[in-house]
Image (tube, rainbow, N blue to C red; front, side):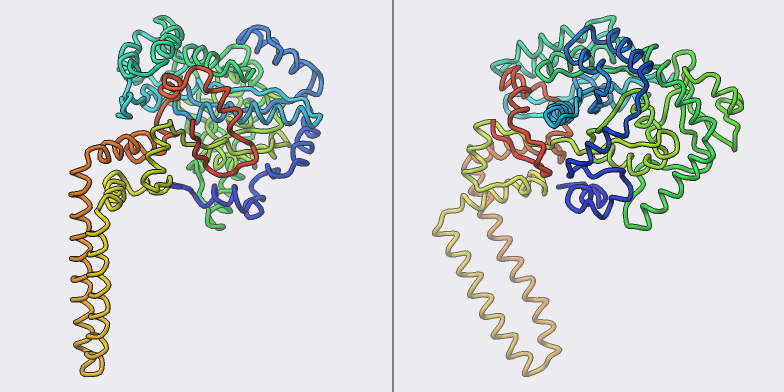
Length: 515
């Protein structure tokens, strides 16, 4: 798969190589029992958590289960991207819900919780999404504007959202109107990006019985404050631990996902609606010419926001987390964060990779079968895909003649090479250069014939564009590029429940799912 890091590949298929960077193996059922037994979660915190979640979610069976002593959480989360963000957001939620069900069946009462990452301030990363039309032509949807004030994106109010452009893109799908209405109901003027994201996901994932937690909610901030206070006071030690962990990762041939130096602060300051970057010098912090002692900053713990490495630890302090479901980048964060877990929380949940999939409609499945294509055939780009399809369209007589010419040329050149080697080895070396040119020219003729066959077969050319636009748009994996919305528009709003049945926790691979 493109862009697979060594750390992620070993996490999936050679966990023993990376076990030292994580507390538990996700592939051993006993890991979950061990992690659950390590959750020492005070009853007072549970009561405060249930109250906070009730304010954000309302009452639900899931919340009733979480209120019971000994109940644990399977947690996942995502930035509050426009119109639900990329497809893998849904796969994360499905994985968490399925794991919670499995643990409950094992006698470990568990509830899935989705962490709404509303604190991030990178507006350009979340103010757009991609969908496709009925011919799989990518369509970019965007909320214009910028975020120079570095406000937490979840708090940014919606003035107008591109619902009309979404409606136009989905208009030729059987469930396009229903899907667009679902989005319009969530993204109403006056709501924030965070609340709109929550309302949409709650509807799309209604079958999964999830609880949602917004870390910017005042009750959530109060729950996080004690650990943030401790993190500020322990910052020099935590930074030293992280730097040592980064050295361990690189020494073992892996990468450190988050850059850290001696002046890196593990927290931001939330002030005046902004998320301010802090720089640390020993036990003193500074931002925009202002300075704070560690004691001063700790006193403002409810107004602090964790960075990427501290965030999961804060999350698992707030929640009685037994397992966390993440993608490749988040699993890499956790390899660094383990040392913070050890120092502050003295436990760490099981880390599990989310389910990963490429979805095909019926036409795409038939086209792939017709041309003998697999997922990896798309990774070289659309032109290479067209050439592959085109070669299958060359008439058998012509294809046979080209193959015969290539075989005869190869035999003749080998005989000539042997003769030159006996006569003068230096001439044989020159022949090899000429041989490569001859072979290249014959290959070039073969490609030209294939392109001409493709040009004559407009259906095949259209099929190549249709497939590439769905499966590897703009050289990105489908799950990382498209929102789930066009898939709902094509297959119906019950698609999420269908995917929950089709995806399985026991598969570590990327799956191609025919719908």
